[in-house]
Image (tube, rainbow, N blue to C red; front, side, top):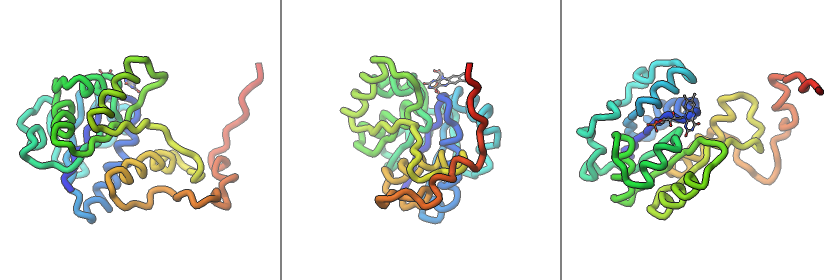
Length: 206
Ligand SMILES: Cc1cc2nc3c(=O)[nH]c(=O)nc-3n(C[C@H](O)[C@H](O)[C@H](O)COP(=O)(O)O)c2cc1C
């Protein structure tokens, strides 16, 4: 699978980090060829929220203004794209076909080629404009996945919490993964203890 990972300037760069961690390990072993493009603000958020050098993964990376990247053309036959996190601005530009940067152009290509496009939107609360843009991209074939972690697998660390989102991204791509415990009708036996790993003092009553 040839996969584009677009990283835009919403809060939530740690979700992208966990996805790239997976793609650099089990993903590579499974034959996934990952290409990475940050928007300008995506790189700033990564620096603030993650702080590591994303080039260390060794994936091909591209400047956001580089429209000569292979996946800027449908003829390169990339298989899928994930934008994680996806800013509301990027959602809006994709919804309206504004290929202002390489992330937007690559997403436009995925839609016109009828290939999977996953937008991991991070914003709260939503405006009506966001909701209408979500509807527009979904009608065009994209999947909108809110960066909304789940708790039923009893994630005990921040990475485990992030993985509840990343696992669903990989599921949507059809990539086998064991990043989270799957629901089998019952919570894990130690579920009650998951939240005591890092105890938080009770909120002060005012
Ligand atoms: C600290 C910080 C956090 C932000 N978080 C979000 C967010 O969660 N969602 C969002 O849509 N925009 C967020 N923004 C605003 C985007 O960075 C801004 O709209 C930017 O133009 C997005 O550019 P891009 O879509 O090209 O990456 C944030 C900005 C800052 C400085």
